[in-house]
Every structure is written in C-alpha cells, then in structure tokens.
Length: 392
Image (cartoon, rainbow, N blue to C red):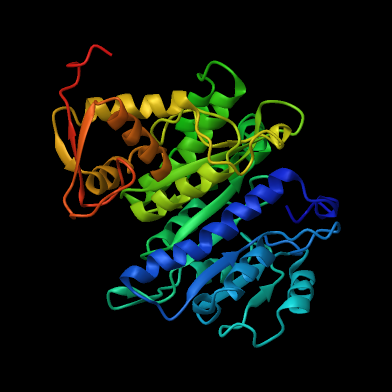
C-alpha cells in the first residue's frame, strides 16, 4: 500500500484489525517454534512496511510488532526485524527510533527502501539457507502487503517456505486481482502469481456462478493451492476476509500459509478473535471463512461469541467422523483440525455441547477433578455413540 500517498493519513478499522492480527500472532508463533528448538533468532520480515505510524497517530504493523517483542524479554533478545518499503523505508526508521533507539533489541532492526519484486537481493535474502543441521536458526514470518496485487512471486515465496518454521502472510486485493484476468496488460503479473495454473484459473474463474464473493474465494483458494502444487507437499492455509467499507463484497483477504499444523491451529484461534461476522465454517476450501466487516465494527468486535449454526455444523461433522470411536480429545483435535477452519475454541464449545446432549461420554484419566465437561488434553477420553443411534 506504499504507493498511495493518502493511505497513511488515517487508519481504517480494517487496517487496524489486520495489524493486530499479525502483531498478536507473531509472538505466539515464536513461542510455539521454541518448544521444539530455540533458534539463534526469530525473523519478522515486512516487505511493504509503510511509515509505521499513521498521520492520525495510530500505529501500524511494524510498530505493534516491535512493541509486543520489546515487552517480552525472550523475544527482545532473539527477534530480528527486517522492514522494507520503497516509499517509506526511511520514514519508518525515523518513527521506529523515536521509541526504540539503537541497541534496544539484541539483533539490530534493518530498514530498506527497495522495490520488492524488482531488487534481486531481496529474493536472494528470502531464499537463503538458514538451516544448520536439522534446525532452522532463523525461522521467520514474512508479511507482504502490496498496493494492489503486483510483486507476488509465488515461486520465491514457496522457496522461502521450504525452511522449517517459515510462514507467509499475504494481503491480497482480490477485487483488483479478479479484474486483472480481463486485462491483457496484467497477464505477465498473473503468471508470476499462478506459475503452474494461470490458464486453469483464468478459464475456470469465468464458470463460477453466484455472488462476487464466490469468485473472490475461488481466486484466494487457488492462490493458496498454488503453493501446494509448487512445493509438492502439504500446505495449510487460512484466508481472513475483509469486506468493503460501503458494500458487502470482499475487498481483500489476509492469506496465511504454513507447512506446519501448529501454525494453522494458532492462526485460526487469532482469526476467531477478530472476525466479527457470524459464518458457518467448513474445510480449507469452503467459501465461508473468517470475516471482518468494518460496517459492523460496533456489533461484537473482539468478542468470543459463536454462531450456533457454526457449532452445530462442527458437532454434526464430529458425530459422523468419529461415530462409535473412543479417542483422546487432544488426539481428535490435532488430527481433525488439519482439514477444518474451526479453531480450538470452536472444538471446545462443540464437544461440551455434545456432552451436555449425552451424545458423547467423557472420562478423565488424570485422577483430577475437573470443573468443565471437556478439555482438549490427552487425559480427556471421549467415547462417541454410533451415529444415527439418537433420533435427534
């Protein structure tokens, strides 16, 4: 978004939510990584970072990331922040150092003002080998927030993902991306985004019927699937939908891509907190996903409310999938969530309701007294009744 000189005058509610999602996710991501191995440093790389502070005084993603890392001594000693923006790189450095002078972080932040996608050294940096033996000594989260959709090079991003622990956020303008397929001048950019399936996506997009959201979701799903095809491996992805300020169609999606199921689990929990539109979630390829509508900003933002239709859908799925089975709640969650957009909170609510409805039996094997009927742990054993044995 750096090419729009007026964009940073005032922070919109959508921009605020986007920044909070990423800045809340990153510290938790680092903690999860360190359970397996504490690396020499954790990387946070923002290639379209902006100035960090809006003209109205609100902080954007770089400053919020720095704040959350500064307040955690573990991260303050290990995080390495790399910020780039062709228009605002040096302004960000100026704003950053007003609050965090040189030496604040053990790894000095790096600031640049290069054009991402056109400067080969950035690609070389992102695709460098950070593995030492079996471990990645700089597992990193890469955030790309281009103005529009250009400069998304899927092949480079996929190579970045090959290093254990690396993850990518892409803020995709699906409105412009959808229209670009009809413009001859933009086809080269589209082929960079869809190096393996450009023609397939172009042809099949025209066949998608229904409201515009279906075409937007078709595009974002195929972009995510492009990474799976390029990497030839399992890829977990979740897209958070941002709707227009003045209509009900999507404007952007924040697409999170990871090869690790733990990152997939974490991002869904964060998305659950910030989605303010009740939706009935399904699997990764479903049209419905987490949604923020700025027009609903005063109607439940930052709450943990659940739409019962969504919980009921998950309950029915679990009853069918685990019919007549006995399984630990943690095992169930770890294996089932890999294909579903539901978060840990959704599973807890669904399983507790099933227990209240006497459709499952629950037994704890840890010898402790529990105040709740179900917890996601290896000691919580769930016995599902045979599906269809209850009339309701």
